[in-house]
Length: 341
Image 1 (cartoon, one colour):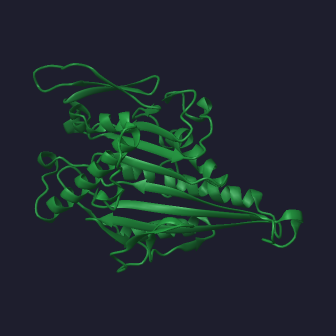
Image 2 (tube, rainbow, N blue to C red):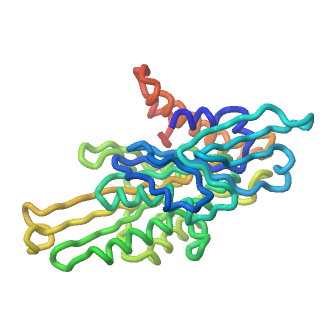
Image 3 (cartoon, rainbow, N blue to C red):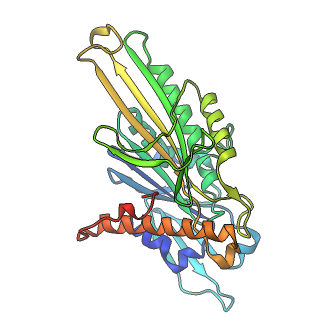
């Protein structure tokens, strides 16, 4: 993960506005099935147990075509040849757990990267999927996409898998499930509830039993993918977005959609949750980070400039936390430098 961060913050990568990095974390991630991705997806046979990092390349825009040639190669390798107008420069190669070329669709990305994390959540483990990249890279398209059809993103596909599991596994009086959803944004270092307009300035609290939480964040019991889609639409209307020179619909806030999955199984098939029965609770955090920006590209000024400062500052704080966690020598991890971390 820290190697991916170093890649993302390098000057060469910083000039690539058409790449999305997906970081997947869970205490229990299964073996990646090579058959779950399309034949064009490049991936390793075995992923790390807790963290996976993949990169997705979208088709370049007209203004990007002449600046750099980029190729997705196996295993999980992205090779770039920068062109500064004086001819191609040196070759740079970046290696990830998986890499997806522009020709690969939403299903391939979900099957190879996100589905194992969803399966982990259904087994009772917490998991997170984080989309990171430049503004306009395609993070929101990758995470949300269309509500149905081939362009569905990670979130609607994950929701469909969860409710298919519930329908397949529920047994009245013996095994029950409860799914709750919450949706928040971090805008200029202020936490807001996207499903309760006006509920701003939420505080982050730490609870011995519940862990870190946003105090006052609403949770909604959902019983079908359609209900989840309704919450996503409501949240999207509230989330801060604006047009910049780099992106007509730039997300100006980090968004976290959280699904809490609870399951109880009665011992002996009695009441739903008697003494001695099995109860599991797990969370799936689906994070669409605001895109990092270069001012000369985005042309931000006024309020957009202020937003840009907060976005880049919080992403820098995230990088510092990753670096501290993986250094092996850091005595302090700067979690409190940003609401994001």
